[in-house]
Length: 575
Image 1 (cartoon, rainbow, N blue to C red):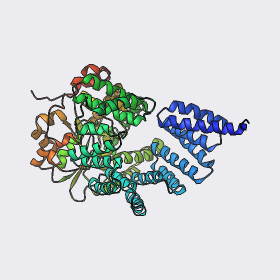
Image 2: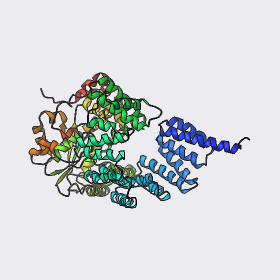
Image 3: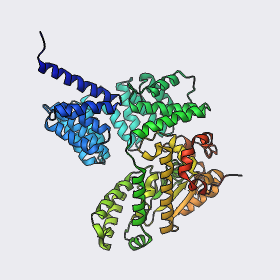
Image 4: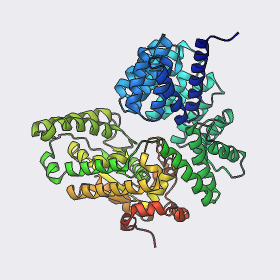
């Protein structure tokens, strides 16, 4: 007897949905998009088709379309579980679109509709923490710890949030409780390794990372392990990583990226630079394919900053902020020595190392929207701008209150703050601005060799990397022209060659007395969360100055993009 046609159609639809979901899981987004498009044509108001189409749009970074599709899916959901999944997806789209407040509400609704789903709770607490509501997130997770006394996940999430908020010793307490609850949870071991690495316990960090990967060989942790210890080409894991990196059908992109950057480090350590660069090139191209970035938009943004923050504008509004706060901003290109300079300053008894703070980006976005809303009158009259600057300076002061509670000075070491030097000057008349410079080739190649935890979209293509460097250089020349004497350039090569002379110059610029402990910065016990975490635990060494040289023959696109900037940098090298 033949099956009813409606049943066959239902089965076909179910099969299509399952196939699309599998394509999404394995990173084959284009194939998933083909199926979702057909489903939307035949079932435009069906929850399942709308949900999978929204997830495809999210994977393709079509964020506005993804948000609209998730909202439609929520509207046509047939039960609370489907509504929760729709709200969860909407939260992901809103977070990616940099709308943290709306994302927080979406994740809250996902949790309310399906309170038993731990992933929704985790994302909700993450959203709370991102919105500056860490204590509220921790309260939810502590309640979950008590409600589920054998469940490691709430403890793990507390540890992750505390690591992200630079409370690494506290994080270890909760991570070790998670380990007590589940000794075989690979993610717990991995995050213990991360906390230990940041705290400077390299050997123990490598052991924890090893434990994680033994428990779950599929875990994304090989790039971190390869930086913590030497893995040889003959190590069995190298072959495993090669297979994972080459697999374009069954391995998620994130796992392939982890494998690719790990392999580049493995081959570099073995002296096989051709193989190392081949893996770097493919891994970077894969990462670049996941990003929506235009160097032309960056060029337009740089030009808007230069034309807005003129010498006349800066002079007109200087001293409008009455802030007495005196942060030390350490900025420049990533991998230019910013972590080293902060570590030197943090060795001084009068300075607290603040790490990479995101506060200036948030303030710049807020004040930019406000000034932009005033149209032709932007940024506003004297009274309006004075009120704006004092409000934003007060917000920054409150956000950094733990950093200046016990010591008179603190550092804000966000490299990208070079975009906001004009705003920093207006907000904090007493601030000191340290601009870290390094050989352009060394800076760019060092970035190209890293899979950054934060998005630096220009760093994964040699041409775009060189083009971005030139935009940065142009903007720094502008700041020096309109704010003469306000910025101190510190060259990485000079710090290596004549450390005491340069450190004295640095401290003098910041209004700090010389302290010999700054020469032994590597002995300072403080958390370091950047890609330079291992280097700054060591005394100064010169091998990094020309560390890019073994790759010279592969770097033509970068050299071309850098153009005259590659030669214009006044390098100081020991004779």
